[in-house]
Length: 154
Image (cartoon, rainbow, N blue to C red; front, side):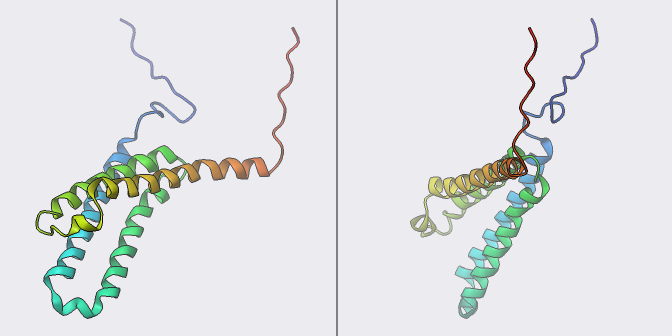
């Protein structure tokens, strides 16, 4: 039996499949986002002495979460599908944690349901991935008109 040859595409072998690195990074970011969410909820609900710092606490949690979600954008800048894969992996883990946190914090579900929470992140990630794909295309077209292909002689 002849040995298998790998098929290389324009972006390398298996470019159409999610990258293991994207999934791995998504797992790490999802865990970090979950930790931020747990600490945020514990500080907000179990330590009333921090109530006077509620605005700072909320702002710090939002900024830290945004920074964590920008990591896939920075890491996979040239590969928008990997940004989406990584981000959705992280957001799915955070959504599972959000669902689990509704057990000790039942009023959490009155703010945003689990499905809506997931869709909020998924739509935002899809928009970011689409922008990472479309903006470079538009910038390339702006540099000049595409060169027409030569007609072949029959």
